[in-house]
Amino acid sequence: GAFQGTSRNAHSYVSALFKVFFSYAGYTSLNYSIDELRDPVRNLPRAAMGGLVATTVLYVLSNVAFFIVLSPEAMRASSTAVAGVFFTTAFSATWGQRIVPAFIGLAAFGNVMCATFSASRVVFEAAREGYLPFARYLGSVDGRFQAPVWALAFSTVAAAAFIVGPPPGEAYDFLIDIGGYPSWVFYGLSVVGLLVMRKTHGELVRPFTTWMLANVVTIVTALFMCIVPFVRPDGDATSIPYWAAPLAAVLFIAASVPMWYIQVVIRGGLDRSHYSMQTGEGIK
Image 1 (tube, rainbow, N blue to C red):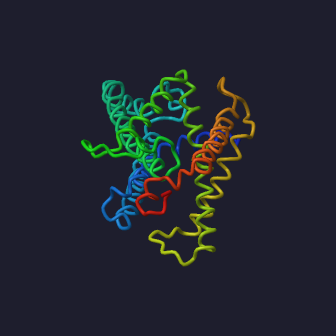
Image 2 (image 1 turned 90 degrees about the vertical axis):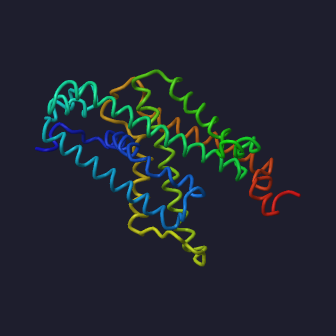
Image 3 (image 1 turned 135 degrees about the vertical axis):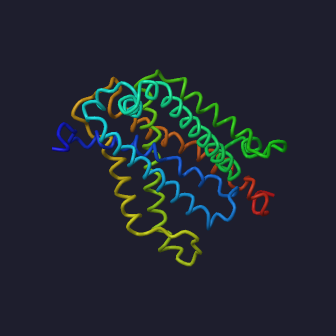
């Protein structure tokens, strides 16, 4: 049948889903720079939906083309990107081994640029809100470049450490899983928070309203993505234990709790934040 030879273990599917969701992650980057977007109430939903639909269509058509030209055995046996094997088979080795890798490199470069832009804005806003120390630097805008240079430098150095620190090979999948796990923890909690606020703050104006079906699907998916990684798979295909990535992600989240307590509760970061001082609500 069509699913002959595929895995029936839930852990295999959640591991694959982390990579699939990672490939779609770029469309959310605009959320981190809404203050730099013209008419965000109108343009943000259009950009998000447009980017997601376009990416989905391209991915689906690519997979259809792969299955038309290549057999499942050829794709599984490939030691390189399936796109390279596809173009080698459909056109020539020059396409598959030279031209396609160049386009993949350009696509990866574009994703890095997008991620660098959005990550610096997260650090910048977190510092201005009072959640990070050294807000004088991380929450500042350079007068010459009109950009959060310190926040950009911080996120770039952190990303470089994650790239060059771990060994190559299996570490790539390991890092994707570490990044994906806490994302789904907070995706689920965010949607639960939205539903709670609908009950407790029903009078608030909502420029964006999510569908209840989408909320339920997101919560169920988040539970699946957060629980199943701790379920033992049929067999460890790598030298890294199956529980290492989710456990490391949980430890990262746990380590942020004392950091939050020191910065927000003990040091009064929110009262000393950039926005509190601007509105006159901060410490006098």
